[in-house]
Image 1 (spheres, rainbow, N blue to C red):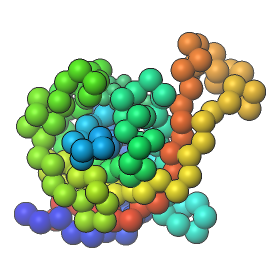
Image 2: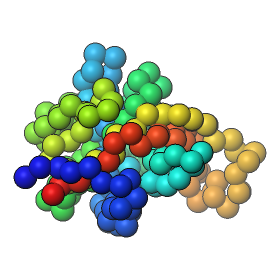
Image 3: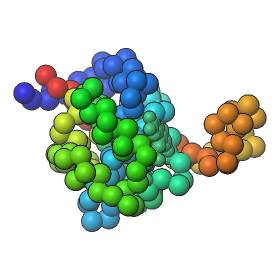
Length: 170
Ligand SMILES: Cc1cc2nc3c(=O)[nH]c(=O)nc-3n(C[C@H](O)[C@H](O)[C@H](O)COP(=O)(O)O)c2cc1C
């Protein structure tokens, strides 16, 4: 079964529903090219600057944040229901302590347009290059959102990744 190119927005509903139900798997690599997977529950594919952009929010405390600051590329992988337990685990353990690709037998398939691999077992993939990033400032945030989402002040960096390739299981 192959994976075919899709319009970046043709699977948006499925992508967002999977993100809400269990999370998506964000992959970034270390300077040696070793991949790490992290679960994300917030983000969206959309249009900015006349380009298809996948927006993700990554807290500074994540190992993934360190990797993104270095490589400037990432892939977003839409998991099938069968990976639910792996997705949950990638959302609690850090790549600083464990090789999550090895732990879950994830297959690192080379990206088509970026140096970051995709996870072969997932059904959908977005390959992205960071074209803008910004760190959240408390002074600009609705106080209610601060209290609800950032009681410890662990703000996100928001990464805007231009979608260079998008493909889905046939
Ligand atoms: C369902 C779910 C959604 C999550 N969404 C995000 C997110 O959008 N941004 C974020 O920074 N952390 C999010 N997390 C937490 C990270 O996935 C978690 O801290 C992970 O262990 C970080 O991995 P790393 O240190 O290898 O980067 C989420 C966790 C779960 C379980």
